[in-house]
Length: 325
Ligand code: FAD
Ligand code: FAD
Ligand code: FAD
Image 1 (cartoon, rainbow, N blue to C red):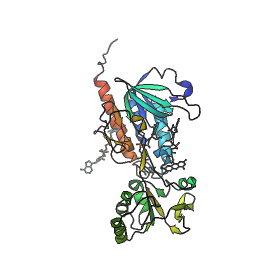
Image 2 (cartoon, rainbow, N blue to C red):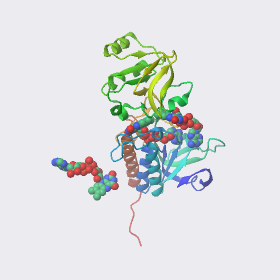
Image 3 (tube, helix red, strand yellow):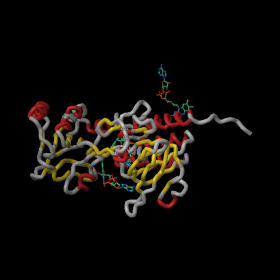
Image 4 (cartoon, rainbow, N blue to C red):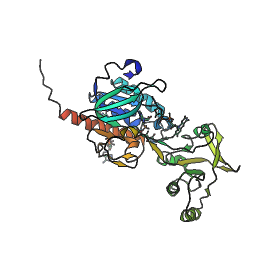
């Protein structure tokens, strides 16, 4: 059922089998499986996550390659509803481990918010990440192209950049190394640092040896129309023609609510076992938030694994069901 400020009654003294933080690809998959295992689940989704900004899901078997992430989300939400899962638009602020249960504080509503606390036996962290984008005076100019032909994921979109003139937008010297992987797809790479980092002589020499121009002048704006970026204008007034772009500026990890818990991390990612269980036996992590490949196919499979592991735990500790008249 879709929950809101108005119909929380009964849900606040219910202990869910699992609360799923994040209703993207991984979270919705986990919740559908949980419900089909006849467990009770609540998905909390803040909105505007990574799969929401995915304009085309290009490599998911069984779906046309132009399927937008929003279609996946809508389909997932109605699927979840059809199997009786709870779904709430809200932002998970904090999680407290109470021993047998987790207390999950959710902010509902951006204006006049309320902060109800929900409880569950298991926690599934599927809150993902969001890519850092270049920050320009007119941020809408960046949004006009980001996720279209100004890509953020080489694995997703390298194929579509093949042999095109590509701008690589970075904010650290380490990220420039992306050029030497991206060149599998296209060698026509221009690196833009926007002056955000120092570039050492070795890296300059390496770029030169590959023939990849390095531009350190900050960007004024992206040029193009109808979400198709065709170049950049720099703050010194010069323009550079491009056919595509890749942003490689790191990510924000949606893991703040987990910070009070004792978990194994690798950078911003959670470390898990083969069933997506973290170092805490009742916390699972899926998709982009866990260590591994950031792909829809992986997040969806992670949801399957986590839900199955949770079902096994709960089933094994439950009394047998007897055929009683
Ligand atoms: P998400 O789908 O990001 O879901 C996490 C959800 O958690 C979000 O909806 C977010 O709003 C929510 N959330 C975060 N914090 C909180 C909180 N505190 N409380 C409540 N909710 C919260 N992958 C592919 O496989 N193929 C592609 O072609 C492809 N193209 C892409 C193109 C773009 C432009 C982008 C940005 C990504 C693309 N990806 C692609 C990557 C894909 O979107 C991710 O790998 C996938 O969505 C990961 O699923 P997830 O469930 O881990 O995270
Ligand atoms: P959030 O982290 O979502 O929210 C900030 C705070 O608001 C939270 O800490 C919480 O306190 C509160 N909050 C959030 N959701 C809720 C809720 N449901 N209930 C109660 N409180 C809540 N952005 C655009 O605006 N337009 C674009 O066209 C655009 N395109 C993008 C393309 C790509 C490829 C990428 C990667 C990102 C894009 N963005 C775009 C995303 C943008 O950069 C933000 O990261 C994203 O939308 C998160 O929004 P936010 O600022 O509200 O932050
Ligand atoms: P397959 O999809 O079986 O592909 C292997 C292929 O290899 C087959 O097409 C076979 O013909 C071919 N092959 C085998 N040997 C050779 C050879 N020597 N030379 C050439 N070709 C060969 N899963 C779900 O997730 N959800 C469901 O609801 C679901 N329902 C199911 C219902 C039924 C009736 C069945 C039978 C299965 C169902 N499954 C379901 C399971 C699902 O079909 C499998 O998990 C999935 O297909 C496994 O994918 P695969 O690629 O490993 O194997």
